[in-house]
Image 1 (tube, helix red, strand yellow):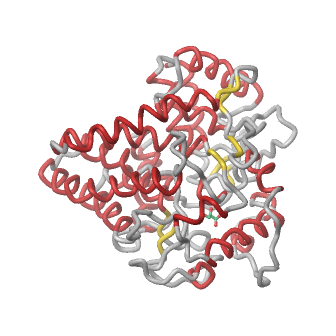
Image 2 (cartoon, rainbow, N blue to C red):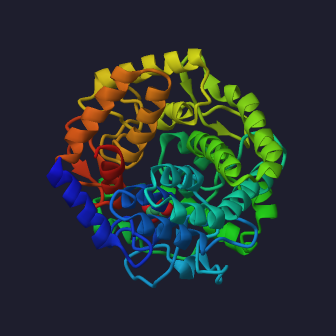
Length: 419
Ligand code: DGY
């Protein structure tokens, strides 16, 4: 364990760019939104001030409309595509992408405050960050749920953080490929193509970027014009949990005026969430908002309502049964895709591999619902996997590490969770 922890610390220090942490050298050379929020929890175990700085740096790029971008391009790099020249967003107030990512930040801020030894610094930082978090969550409500359904829309697979999830196959088929400028992918120079999204997916990812760019990422238009619009289980679960955290932070600061607003969000999400449950599959499913259909794929995001604390006790019991079935089919858990499904691919990014951060979120949820032995199984699997190297993801059939190496959020999970 000591070697694992010191390797993890070294990775964070090595990937530190001065106030923000890149996910991995070469492959991801900028600040990623949810990566940073998770990485901050790792930093907190070695340097609280540095952990807060990670969040300050992320929010330094918050747009006027409240959005926090999925990538912030603090410094130029030649090793990533699509970089700032493709996104074309002028400084808003920093060079950044025009889409967002699952809003982990409020969960992190609460966690950092609760763990803090230096409570004075923590309180100052919470005061500074609270209005920014509130404005981002308000953006989700107005820009991504303008019809007031209680569930927010995700308009690009990159926003879900689970880019090539099999859940997006169907909605992506309805995205036409425009006559976009020719491009060269940089990811394939770092990682084998068998572990990355396909070319057909990239053509659609970029089509969406160019369409959004054409309206300068105007959040009042994107919801209506995007040919990809889904209710993503990960984003909605994380947002619900983040709203619980935001509420907790509001109480801490005595910001009682905003409580009815946050309570309203929580209530409407709770009312809407059971529409995402498929009782036959005993699993939560994402939804295509443009066709109104639940998406067939069962992915690890389906267990995240446990992390959110939004699953009912009966649903939680059934989810635990589903997870047990999944685990009986693989050597290590938790695969990102149902191991019995035809589109399961053990090494391809979000179509099968295990991600330590997802294991952390699901384990946290399992414990909250009292499934301790299942949580224990996932924890010991994760521990074994990390022993073979701190990578981006792992093959659930044999535990082989895959994707990028010396990976920041995997290292952070080691520090924050297993130490
Ligand atoms: C990538 O480039 O693979 C990232 O996941 C986009 O956010």
